[in-house]
Length: 388
Ligand SMILES: Cc1cc2nc3c(=O)[nH]c(=O)nc-3n(C[C@H](O)[C@H](O)[C@H](O)COP(=O)(O)OP(=O)(O)OC[C@H]3O[C@@H](n4cnc5c(N)ncnc54)[C@H](O)[C@@H]3O)c2cc1C
Image 1 (cartoon, rainbow, N blue to C red):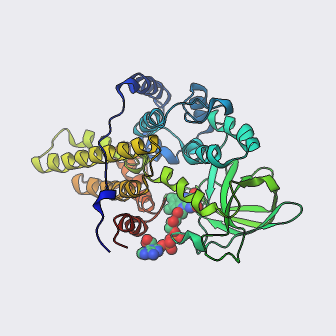
Image 2 (cartoon, protein in one colour):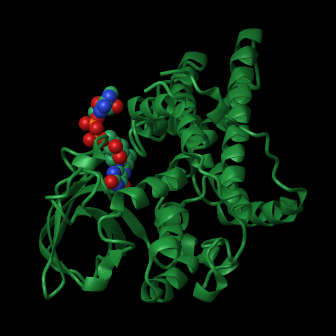
Image 3 (cartoon, helix red, strand yellow):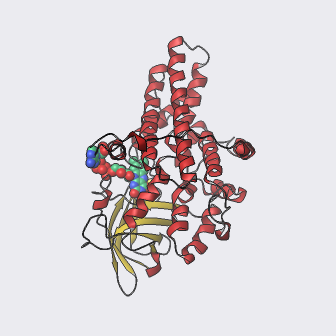
């Protein structure tokens, strides 16, 4: 076993100057659209659920940007999409309704969906009219996803599903779920015998969602129970038994985007505002180091975007962005508490900053879990470096 640094490259990458007008247009749109949103609302950002807002983005052509025109998309590049996502997050625009569909379900269906799935579903994603959720985790299969047990059994009538998912974000409001199920329990390895399915949540009996409240008291994720739920034969996405490979590819989209360092951006800007009146050298140093970190993370994330754009596999780099980004995002609320002597709270005392902090102090612990825990990220990084 030896350290293989060759595989660890973050090629410097700059967004083409030609994307500046798009950025300006999105920023202008968000300035007026988000003007009425409270700072706390904006600090929820990609957890903020607003179907009407997503539809407006769809009407502007800013969802499903990379999807083919033939399926309602816009045939634009991943970098154009990156610019839009960055602006949405920086503005704290409510993005949860379209988030999963735009980020990963659409691209997954382009790659593996049947012609019928593409024709019927992709146009809805691009129009901001389809909310997707991710059915991967189960009670005893989170980090160790390959141990999942929810069973999809092929019958003459279709696929019969029995089992349970957990932590399924927005399952109670979503239109579709893309889920990973075990189709062949007798397969030789745990990774074989898994398959992906698309589930129309409005048209399928036998599915029950039980919301789980988080620390803030909001219920955005769920337990989802499947009891003899019957899916049509053509609900299979991709190849039967190839679910593990498909899911692994999907996770590369999930781990490297600007959401891995901009979840707390509203807090950072508010903190700077609060401190700007009387900043000591120590405070300036602390803020300077946060700006340096977020700038480095942005460059790393852009480098991954460049690799994705060139069709390369950035799994190692994406895991590093996720891991470093999480440390940054989770550290910021703690640093804010050290720098400003104000109790975090969700109660409205007329101080935006205090409520934003109250919100993020309670949300931040979950940042390192969603999309894979630090230990799992470090394991992937170690493997990528040839150390495991
Ligand atoms: C806000 C939020 C939203 C989520 N949304 C979704 C969603 O929409 N869909 C979905 O499918 N899932 C979702 N999840 C679930 C998430 O993917 C899992 O929580 C995550 O993969 C961890 O799994 P677990 O909770 O079962 O913890 P476990 O896997 O049980 O891990 C518990 C602890 O043990 C550590 N650990 C586990 N295995 C190892 C190992 N081999 N070596 C070292 N340490 C290890 C972990 O790092 C962690 O610290 C969401 C989670 C959160 C918090």
